[in-house]
Image (tube, rainbow, N blue to C red; front, side, top):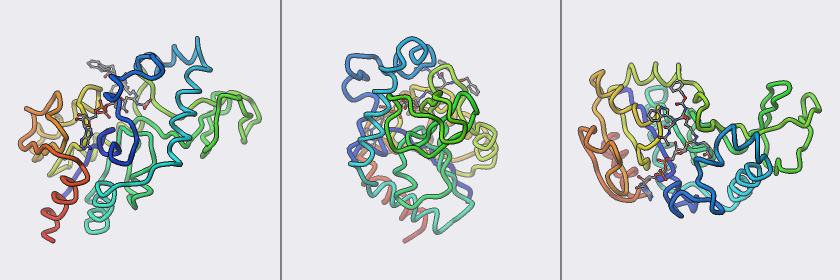
Length: 229
Ligand code: BV8
């Protein structure tokens, strides 16, 4: 059984990572959609850097939760038949033990050089404009996909959705595209679609099955059902 799991901020909420809906989607009074754009980076790079430096620093204070661990257990059992596609830029899936993970919106712990196009694992701040370890130019930006930019690995994601028998969406409000359209894409190709969320998402009615509750409870229970153990 080939499974594609889409995750959003809700899967990391119980680890202490704020969701986008928390604080009414505001950061320091800025609408997230206003800080997470190439335009914002052009006009107020220091504000954007502070936004991501703060989130990157906070990553060192959080740990994976039972939802992350349960998905790693599922991968252990079914291997290549599972792909986790996450909208999250945290590394909690990997720290939970998952390896087959696509970060369609990028990663906080990665810096992207606009001069040499190189990507480097990065755990520190970027606001002080450090030089690129590869080319030495001070043109590093957060390696994340901003609104108006094309998500990463869309071909790999579409190929997995084409072949999926089951599509599961965990902890996402279904407000941001193209991720919000995956349920129709996979469902339209015959996949069984399941939503695991604290509350019904914007696209809840599109799912064959929808369960409400915290991910740390719903995901381990769903994985046990799939594995029959
Ligand atoms: C693009 C990285 C072209 C940066 C992010 C069609 C219609 C309308 C608009 C568009 C459209 N197509 C494109 C757009 C524009 C735009 C868009 O969708 N705008 C929205 C606002 C309308 N999309 C884009 O610009 C995208 N690019 O379309 O390029 C293209 C398309 C296809 C193919 C090729 C090219 C790029 C968007 C990416 C932007 N970057 N993140 C950063 O993180 O700072 S988006 C960011 O916001 C997240 O990654 C995520 O995607 C989104 C937040 O949503 P969620 O993760 O769902 O979080 P949220 O807080 O909203 O909800 C949490 C949910 O969890 C809730 O439902 C809650 O109930 C639940 N929950 C909470 N606690 C728990 C829980 N569930 C379980 N357990 C719990 N404990």
